[in-house]
Amino acid sequence: MSWFESFILGLVQGLTEFLPISSSAHLRLTAAFAGWHDPGAAFTAITQIGTETAVLIYFRKDIARIVTAWFRSLTDKAMRRDHDAQMGWLVIVGSIPIGVLGVTLKDQIEGPFRDLRLIATTLIVMGIVLGVADRLAARDEIGGRHRAIRERKTLEQLSVRDGLIYGVCQAMALIPGVSRSGATISGGLLMGYTREAAARYSFLLAIPAVLASGLFELKEAGEGHVSWGPTIFATLIAFGVGYAVIAWFMKFITTKSFMPFVIYRILLGIVLFILVGTDVLSPHAGESAD
Image 1: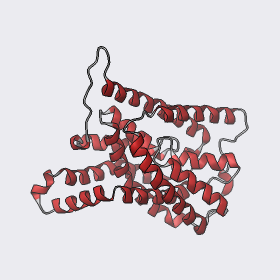
Image 2 (image 1 turned 135 degrees about the vertical axis):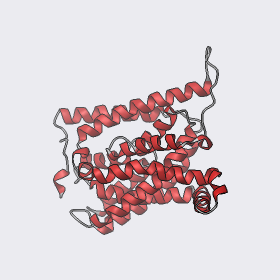
Image 3 (image 1 turned 30 degrees about the vertical axis):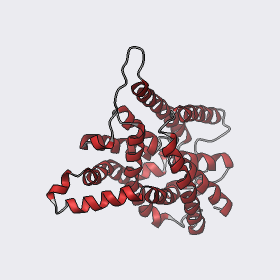
Image 4 (image 1 turned 45 degrees about the horizontal axis):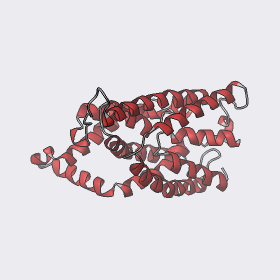
């Protein structure tokens, strides 16, 4: 991998990680469209450390409060009723599904799941799911002629059951094209949470999963065509761009609809199907790199 490739892929990672359009799919597609080798699941996981570091900094006050309360709850029973302490446990519970499936499906994640036809399918299907979830949320927020405005749930109302469902939704993002934020935000909206609550828990839930995945894949760095230098460079680029994107996205979701992302996902999926179907692009483009 050249330094230019690592710069572009780091830029793509930072731009797409927090948007509901799938960063792993865009890394895969960027390489395929440019005629580069597939950077692979290990490169994706490691560069995500950069974007998750941006989350740690952006939500540093929330995270410090949650971690402190969680540790205190281990010895102080009264603290176990504290919302921040409960949030710590809920993040742990929600991280179980992706931890189990990530290890179980490692070979599939690095192989069959990177087929461009599967990515096109997940882009379209999850785009439709996000669109439905967004529409239901909008209906509750604005009401209508025959519908009263319905109050949606906040993170204070997050239960173990809902946290686990969030976790299952996050685990679906092991398939490129699903999108970690897209799946968890869609799940949150369908369960009746506000847009901001769904997004905030989605970001918090991603921290242990992404950091663990990135650290686990560190041993793979430097193998094949991807060397340490470009990987670290791409991770730094992803961090800087990712921080700017997360700040923008948290403001965007308070007043805007997810529909632009829905339309983009569906159109990209259709274009990808056409390109593969007409043999302009191989469904396994770049996979022979290693």
